[in-house]
Image (cartoon, rainbow, N blue to C red; front, top):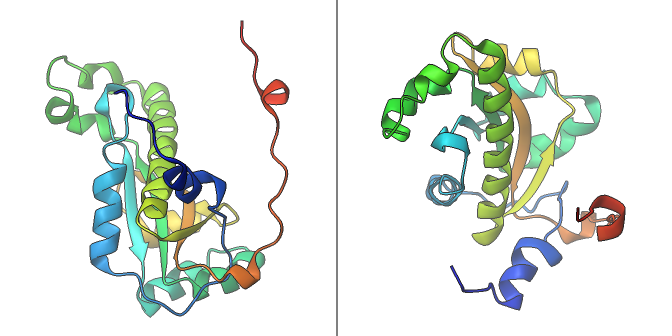
Length: 196
C-alpha cells in the first residue's frame, strides 16, 4: 500500500482525538456499532486468530449489571455513556482457526497449550480493542477506554459459561469537550524507542 492518510484523517484518528469521560445525550445506533466492528475486524492478528469478543452494554439493565463491577471513579462516566463496550478475549479462539486460518493446522498450535492460548488471546484481543477504538474514531464517535473494574464480576455477569474473559471497557458516544483536561504529555521517540 503506497497511499498515506491525509492530515485531516490523522487529526481525526490521533492528533485531535481525546479520551472522553463526559458525554453528550446523543444515542449511538446498532448500525454504528456494526460499522465499527466491520472496520476493526480487518486489523491484523497473529494467524488471523481474532480472539476479541465484545458485549455492548447499552440498555439500562445491562448498564446496571455493569455498574456493580465498576470502581467508584468509573461509575458516573460509564452510566452516562450511551454505550459501553465490554471487550474480552476468547481463550478457545483456536476452535475458529480451521475456518480463519485454513492453510495450516493452526488449531494444533494452541489446543492443549493453555499458556500459549491465553497469552495469544490476550495479546491479539488487546490489538483488536485498539483497532476498535480507531474504528469508532474514524466513524465520528468518541471513546473512553478504561480499566478500573472487577474483571471476575464482569466475567460472571456477561461471559458466564463461556471461555471469554474481560480485558477492558470502552465507553462510546459523542464526548462533551467541556469535560476534557489538557492533553497529557507523551513520551518522545528517544524516550520510548531505539533503533538497533
